[in-house]
Length: 151
Image (cartoon, rainbow, N blue to C red; front, side, top):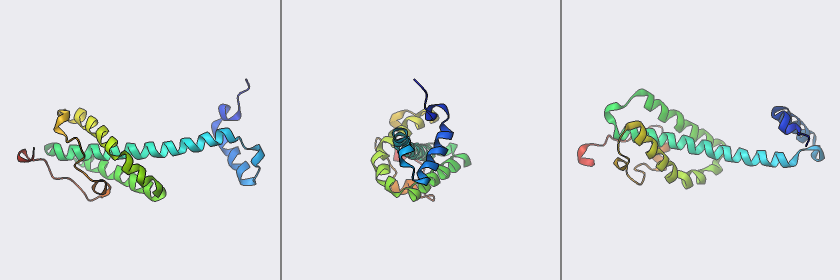
């Protein structure tokens, strides 16, 4: 089996494919691999959105449930990943329904990570997110600390 350019030199394949498309040389384009690449780009965008959302939720949970350990690095992480989500949604507004679709799953992932990082029992965190999507996307939002009478 002869390896294709796609298998031998991915970057060169990308460059040549872009040139062929720009010139309208459709019959010379490696359609099968191009289709796979486009599908993978969509998956990559969704994974990045999920990852950033999970990280924002993780740090919001830490901020709320470990108020005595709050740090500027937590605030920086919340801001950085919130801005990444906002930028991604600005560039691809059609991802907003996907964000809503995976919010609960990402919250669950955030709980798992928060439990590990804080060493708090997993049942310390509510099953359903105490944060709304709007709050998560608000760069000025920070949750109140959990006080003993709120537990």
